[in-house]
Length: 405
Image (tube, rainbow, N blue to C red):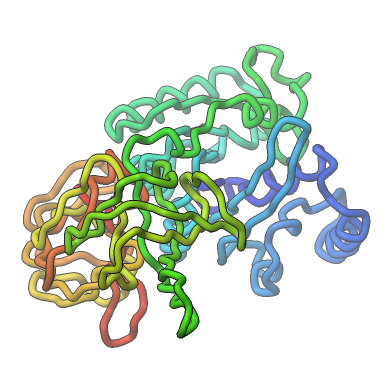
């Protein structure tokens, strides 16, 4: 995904990447050229390829999260274009939750901004495996190597405090295509790969090799009456591998059984792994429903008292004593916020203990008490089953994105 502050060039970067890699249909290109002529004189406005809402095009900003798909000879990509404005940070969190790599743009003229810090902090909290720092608009600073090195040094301190992993730095000009698909003739001092080559080469895991399997039951498929078929339990595998004859534990009840059949797309398969949607048949008949967790390998934790980092996404202030619905995968339980341990100051990255509350876009550590035991993993150990959301019971809107500790 792309992230960064307002007007750092996120949409232009994606548009240029699609254009230079020849991933745009002829009719799309013709429409963009028409709209570009209507907005300003000059070349193509590449941001129009991702800013699809009318309000986005009129204001020249990104509001909603846009997804674009393209492929090269080496890899398929899903690009998530996240908004930069602070009031749309919740949209950025939504996009980042499934990202394997984040391209964090920084305007070479302005350097690291507050929203850059916020997006970097969210990338660190969500443990996005790879971070590419794209110092954009280098053409506006004369392609200065000194300016690039200064920004890289500033961000390195932030990355260290946020414990960001696998950070790479690229100088570029999205508008002119420098270091996007091909190497820049204007920055011969840069010896690294251009962005597209880096995206093609970087190593990405799919979670299939994780030892412990997690499948949260989404739907129970009941057999027709009068048949000898068993019930099937449908859901998406969060991590690990499920194979026929594997022993599984169903939580939170603790039932144990054996997998006698796996179906995917209407056909029987011998095994399935992370990110695939399947239906399992078990050897035994138990009372299993939506929200139950099927586990292979090491068991997760089960408890009512949970510690979590929360990215607050509601205009209503989060305060101790507030009640919400806590949803982990497909399981929802009522909960109460017992305390707020600290608030993370985005500007200084310092932790302020025991704040009275948390407002929109604040990042806080909280303790909650669930109404009933819930199975969960620590986010660092199993990302899909280690995240949750807090839901406002009155509006059923997402109030906070949670990372379980």
